[in-house]
Length: 73
Image (tube, rainbow, N blue to C red):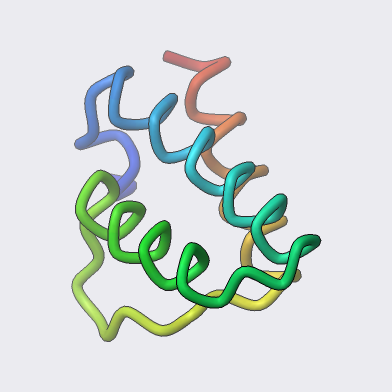
C-alpha cells in the first residue's frame, strides 16, 4: 500500500497548502519561516526518514504526489 493512501484527505490538503507556503517563503528568502513550515509539513505528513529542508524539485514532486492522491481519493 502506498504511504499516502494511509493519510486522511485533510492531511493531504494541509500538506499541499504547506508546500505552497514554503514556496512563497523561499521567494521572500524567509529562512526562519521556511524552517517552521518544514516542521509543520513533517508533522502533518509523517515521514519515516530524516526531515531535511526540501529542495524546489522535492517540493514539486511532493505536491504532484499529494495532488494525485487528492484527485484519486
